[in-house]
Amino acid sequence: MAYEPIWMADPDKLNKFEFVKMEKDGLDVIRTIIEEYAQQGFDSIPADDMDRFKWAGVYQQKPKDGHFMMRVRINTGIMTTQQARALADIAKVYGRDLVDVTTRQAIQFHWLTVESLPDIFKRLEDVGLYSFEACGDCPRTIVGNPLAGIDPNELMDTTDLVEEINDYFLMNRDFSNLPRKYKVSISSNLYNNANAEINDLSLTPAVKVIDGQEVIGFHAMVGGGLSAKPHLAQPLDIFVRPEDALRVAIGVTTIFRDYGYRQKRHHARLKFLVADWGPEKFKEKLVELVGELPSRGEDKTLGWEAAYFDGVHPQRQAGLNYVGLNVPVGRLDADELIELADLADQYGDGKIRTTMSQNILLSGVPDEKVDELLSARVLQRLTPNPRNFMSRTVSCTGNEFCNLAIVETKQRAKIVAEYLDENVALNEKIRIHFIGCPNSCGQKHIADIGLQGTLVKTPEGTVDAFDIAVGGTLGPQAQLNKALKGRVKGDHVGPVLAELLMFYKENRLSPEESFFE
Ligand code: SF4
Image (spheres, rainbow, N blue to C red):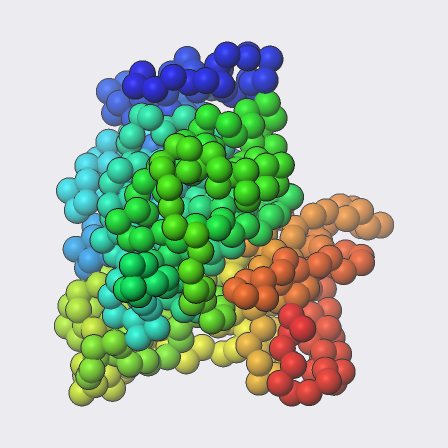
């Protein structure tokens, strides 16, 4: 091992999964999958290695009957059409045609068998994609500005920086055993396209005059994360020049690896260390590890647009446009993805971009081709002009496939959005997020209205229900949403939200007052 794992010094401070990780590195399971389990089948997989499957980007899906879900990293949400077609082919051949866009811009498959994994790994690698470390206690998919390189509202194109940092950490055994998952966000967009505050480490747009020259770079935030104990990331008093970004990322990740808590799994995310240390002590340790860094400059984040882009918008490049499409609750099928790839090649720049709002963008469309593109058959469902509520509804996987889920979410979310679109007339677009358990993969806490699945007892038996929280937002006015009293039965969510929204419409102080205010 290339570094000294200092946390091993005190075994009493290690939870039992730490011993599983020490016994065999999570990354080693990839070879075992290829060489053993894919040949010997599902029943040959011991429990410890099943837990390590996460490092391959693979989880058992519900019910645990031999099928898996897989997450594929899409750095900053930008893929080529060749990559999109490879993903669609995998979904067709092995994944019953399902393609989910996640809230971290990744692509998720379901229904995979262990026998199929070696071929899927190979198909991904052939087009430069990886599922490795998309899950597990390691640096996950780096989220970023899906408009990087074409964005009129970014200070710099962050595509290469994301690739550089991704390439450093991916499959790097110095960082494949962190206390828990570790999420990085890098964006230079002025409207916080990469949801900075809910990541372990975020780089956000900033400028600073250094030696008489204005330098474009980043501010850094650390210690954000959702789940049952949500924290917003805290700013560090540093300015990060683009050439310093990798060493800052290495420094922050090293602090997490070496000083992060490993005693209790639910108290192991970086956010708990940051909360205890505070940003000053964190900066001191960072500087000790990576050397001096300039202090903060001028913050350039102007607001938050929640990573929504519906419609046709001009790019930074004159005469070209990007088109934001709605993917209802983040789910499309393989043929739709292939059709989007064909459109991206025929009308655009050969890229497909995924967003943290579980949607898709096409880009590089010349002005004169926009109308023809918009008439394409696949854009009738994946429309650039979605109805208000469907356009802003996000959902986690829920109990259709997720073993941790308490309730079903995706189908419910779609039904509720359709109900609200039929029954509530509101000019403002209200963001509604559904999650099936406290883990918050659907990022409930940042929604205008967040719904968290639970169960309630009724005279007819136990039924699905939801806790409701309101008023979440990110950006300069970042706040997590706050729980309302009471629970709502799953079947009543649509009518209850309709009532809540009509109350808001009738009682807001002015039509300009936004929901989170
Ligand atoms: Fe599963 Fe819970 Fe995450 Fe939803 S929030 S996908 S139910 S772990």
